[in-house]
Image (cartoon, rainbow, N blue to C red; front, side, top):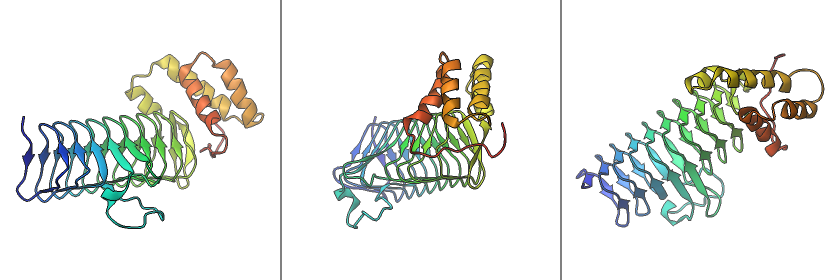
Length: 269
């Protein structure tokens, strides 16, 4: 299987293109780029820096992948000279005008998992870690150092503040400004975002069974009730639902970094 490079594309010496890669018109590929088998890069894309793209990906028009970090530490100069990387997994769909940057930390990695969809003008900032099966809708934005778990949906024009954690299977509503951590399975909404409940639609779509969803709902009510302190409610939920892996995932997420603020409900649950 051969590599197909349009005559108007510029592919630098040193770039590594696996079998079946196609490079579209007026696209630029830098010397430190590695592109996996059967990945298609369409017109006017710029792939630069130390960027690795996996197999069977689609990168559409005018995407910019591997650009320098939007960070005060970047002093200018060729992004290829930076030791930082952008690593993108397999089977991702990256649409028009998407931007993903290399890390800002010395030797760091901005990492995107497999099977994601990144719609037009969405952005993955420096040092982000994005899981598998993540969807960023149109103009969704991840600030630097954001960690996003698997199966997360970030709706259009939503923004996640730098250093936030977004737990697995959660849903961020359109136009939300997320400045606090989002628990796994949670649904957040608003500006600034607050916890609206559980991502029940997403859980059903991912074939979570009724008993698991019922456990999550019961644990949610216990965790975010008005009685007692939050720490007491965490301990109570950990005791009652110790055998439930999804509930314990929420509790472990909360316990993992006590210094991080959480998105909480605005009203009684």
